[in-house]
Length: 240
Image (cartoon, rainbow, N blue to C red):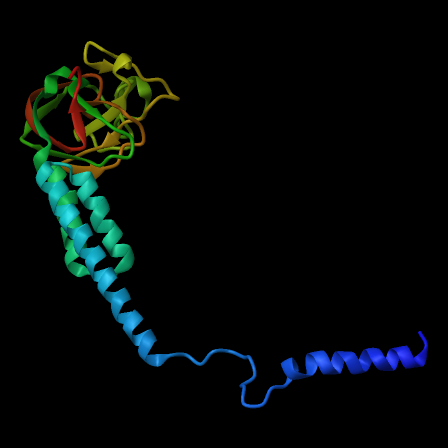
């Protein structure tokens, strides 16, 4: 480019852009200074909105509980805890709701210990908490000839004896309703295994199914007497 033309271009740019690049009396563009008063007002509004939201959740929880849907009431309370983890009153209310399922849903079962495995007629759901409470006394009469080691073989104990519980203790197993014949569960080595109940057990079933119980007695033992079993929590009556 010839030098005179280049000089003319530079002069033109200075003439056009100069006033925009530097105008006296105007501050340079940069970060805006925080408006402390405005921010304080917004903080107050935010706190009020949060308080109103928490109050709405609390009212919803109460309404759900009064309507009989305690699961949704609990969900509302858990939403409050996410915002206010230190809300002890909310934690106490959730515990109260968790406990209420054991008083709201319960069945009594009269168990004749002489019958071995027997269905309670109660269905339980996988992962939904259940509580079992047993009272009473019965006699376990053994008429076997044993050596110093006692029962040490499957032939002596019988196929229904459970090594994971004391002799005579109340045990249970959860099986599909279709796997129960005449009150007795059809179990294989790879099927559902019994567990100890004893006086009381609270647990979350690993599978859904029918609750079946018996006392853990050897095959040739005779059991006489009845136990009272209270079954509560997340339960349903089979066939209903």
